[in-house]
Structures are given as C-alpha cells and as structure tokens.
Amino acid sequence: MSKKLVAYFSASGNTASLAKKLAEAAGADLYEITPAVPYTSADLNWQNKQSRSSIEMNDHSSRPAITGTDANIAAYDTVYLGFPVWWYIAPTIINTFLERYDFSGKKIILFATSGGSGFGKAAQNLQPSAPGAEIIEGRVNPNAKAIEALAAMA
Image (cartoon, rainbow, N blue to C red; front, side):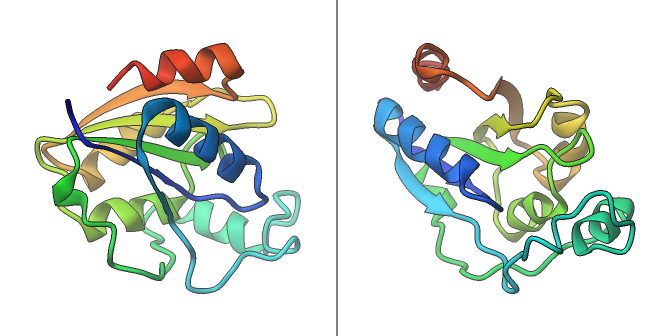
C-alpha cells in the first residue's frame, strides 16, 4: 500500500474543507501550503488588476513565499495537490511548493475548487515545477461520490 499525502492551498477555506474530506477518504496525511503573507480579500479581488493575485497571475514566474519546509515529500508515493483555480490555472504559490521539494517518481493527483471553470492548463503549467513527477488531473469541485473516486486514483 502506498503512502499518501493531501497537500493543499486554500485562500478562502473552500479547498481546505475539500482537502480534509479527501484525506479522510484516501487514508492520507494532510499538509497545508501556507503563504508567508496571508491573502486578504482585497488581495483576491480578481476584478482589480492591481490586486496581489492579479499581479501574481499575470507574471507566470511569480513565486509567492510559503512558510514551512517540513512536508517530507520523500515519505510519500502519491500526493494529492489541491488549490483554487485562478485564471484557469493553479495559483503560482503551487509552483513555489512544487519547486521546494523533489517530486521525482511521485504521482501527483490534482484536485481543485472553482467558481465555474475546469483545470484549464493547470497540469501543463505545473509540470515544469515538478520534473520527473506524473501529474494527473483529478476532479474540480468533487461531490462526495467524486471524492471517493478521487481517493481511489492513488
């Protein structure tokens, strides 16, 4: 049996709630990706081109700082990676997390929350940050049945 981790970034709490349900369903450990500087509601205002999230997402090389270096990725075979979909991709803080650790030989299964879009190019945009890993699109906004299916993807 493989060892599993659910790692997630949640700006408003929606992804955190989903991550906890997935960790329970998958029998996985849970790890929160936390920004060094928490996001405020003003930071998340996608309608403001000068908001923090807009600036980060317009610069694909942006790597917001995160706290913690203790995810112990080497101990896991499968990592479920959750995030809110921003601008049809993962927030750049997810790239920060992936680039902090060695994911070679790992299976990364994406899950996300979204107000209406799918993954877009999230997997494609994350792959360079996790060379040697297999990145798989899981589910966006999974309901209880879909969480079980997602858990079984490991």
